[in-house]
Image (tube, rainbow, N blue to C red; front, side, top):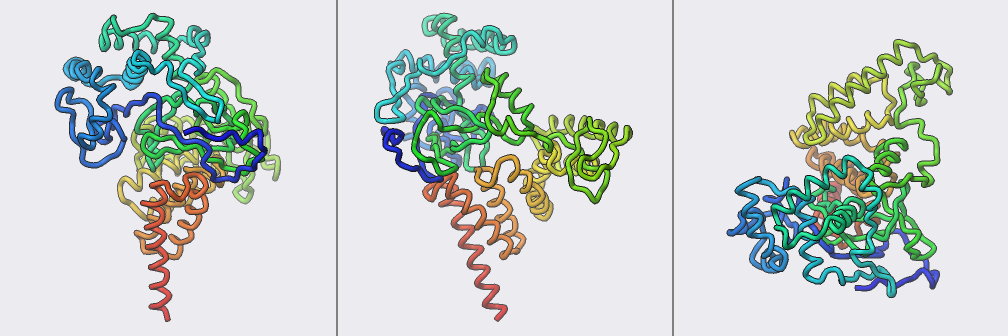
Length: 451
């Protein structure tokens, strides 16, 4: 499919418009979920293991057949991997798939994002010179090369310069492929969508339906001008300083978007020592700018102690959130961290997730509602994660038989997700609509019984 270039015609584009959808040039399932997701379509459910390599899983023979052109080369090699290393590094497998695809004619594959504009793999920026100066990435590249030589053999491996070009294109152009709950399940290279630049205040968003990337507008646009389409490359729940550092280290540019130019007083703020004042305070200030309350030496020391404690525990909880640890951090943060301090919001997020995992529904609802103001501040009113949080809260409230509150939360979810995902997305069709129907039915039932 080619997307019509509306930029020249000055045709307005409404928010919630799908402006591009594409299949990946190459992709791999994350090794952490390879036994939970089909290696071809990424669906979950009852899967069948490849009888030869014993490494990848498929829904059925149809998915296995579709995947065979690329898997037939890697299959015997993955079989060896299972025997030697147990796990194939995701980045190495993605590089191997790109190498194989390029050798099978993929270098000539074009992906149109307008009627006349397209991209080939070679058009993706490799940041070759930046990679060569980046010590950490050079070490990673060297490790991957050793794996690739063992995996593919010398006859299939391109020269070092070409290998580094492929590696650089992956580093700076790869998309994390997300499931409907915004969890990363795969990684892929998309040619046309790679044309989009970054902004910390994006006007568009990438969501996924299986392996298909869907680009949708978050705001009304005067026209479809691809030079002005912006998505976010990084998680927006962060301070300006941390976002800019991540963008520079990962993508080699300094962000000068509108959001990064604005003051950022809340992200690393203390609470005001005056409990009656809700103003954020900077740790280096002598007093609260709003009420004049002094920030004592003891208060500042306590703030640093709490932030160090929280940072340590948030790092520990990156792979698994724990409710008891989250609650302990939140207790220490009380009256010390401002309610919009990034660490505080992250801790609420961890508590919400942990409570859901433990099926502690009252806690999950409480922390979800406490988390919402932080999401609205950092992600904005129209963002997939904001919509998903409304949906999750509504779902929990239905479980707790709070149908009136659930209905309100799900209506909010609907207003967001219809823009970010659209009415045909599986999240809306299979999750949101049934929940809205249930909430509406229970509302009517309660009214009837009350009468």
